[in-house]
Image (cartoon, rainbow, N blue to C red; front, side, top):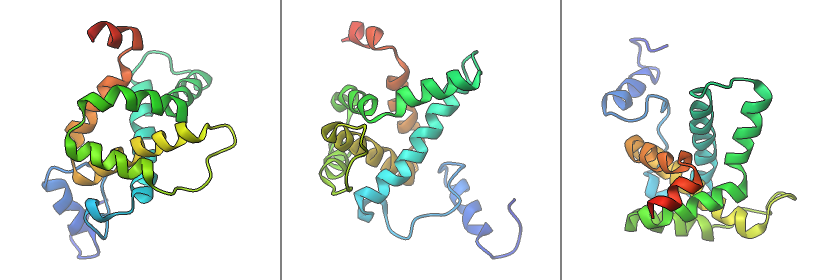
Length: 159
């Protein structure tokens, strides 16, 4: 996978050595703060989906239909809106600003089955995930994702 020539493999090694995500093979052309929020959401969608899938595979039930149903329930616009509401009190000022940028971004028409308000909030959550990913803040991503997997009843009991 990584070799000794100078065809970009060295960059991947440098990224890994800086403690960034081991899945970041190509750094963005701009600093994360300068990337369009819709682009951050595009990356964040994939990162969040991967986090959900890794979590589900860590559980005992690996039937494909069950995995798909559970993943879909966690990555829907409505579920992401609810999760962002749970994250809001935990966000730093910088993270809250990224969420605002994502929510206010013009990301096109929402899918037919998604409420427009839910879709904007889901885009905001994905924007934050993409931003944290490109910033190399995987520990923070994991910390926030832990909130996602705490059952809502247990989370309400903690408040």
